[in-house]
Length: 194
Length: 65
Image (cartoon, rainbow over all chains, first blue to last red; front, side, top):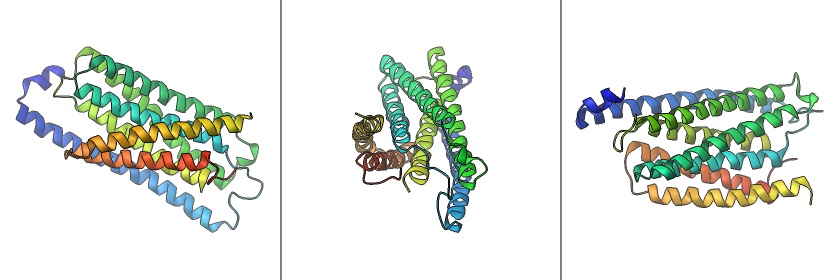
């Protein structure tokens, strides 16, 4: 793949890159639609119920989720800093910020796992519980995939797959990670704040 | 000091730090015009909004317990 990347001209690469970028953005838009569908389903259920959460259902822990949110939002910033370090050809800083992003992503997943293991029995079999697990579970799965994506790209950079001017994989993982962050803004607001 | 207060302090201070860096990134990205830069601007703006929400939770203005 690296051999192919360097064998084409800059003009050809730019064309291929713009097509890849458009395709990747369309993927993110389609993923946004998936999340939006579940969110609107949740909002419909919520509006149809006179009391929310339903009687006897305890709300999830607010402050733990707030800390966990900041861990994920912080990883968005470290990802951006990693990208900037790559653009400025600062490899040591790039590696450090990428590792920080991976660690924060794993920290978020650990926090979510802890939250899942300490949830109340009153949630089982309720619309609130189903909505919560569907949306946060889907998001958690995206974060998990994102962490694998980050590790893969970090290993690829060490193998020299990307050059200083040709690094679409890095751009893609950055956009994907920001997307995962932004989806969590909506989910945190819906389940914990609103 | 209870666990809830510690978590509120962590969340609040973390929100301020992350919001600062997100706004700084947004400011630096602002002159750029490539498609991925435009998307990054939107993402950084929404990330700042997320930090603001967490900050209001940490300060006790919003959020249900």
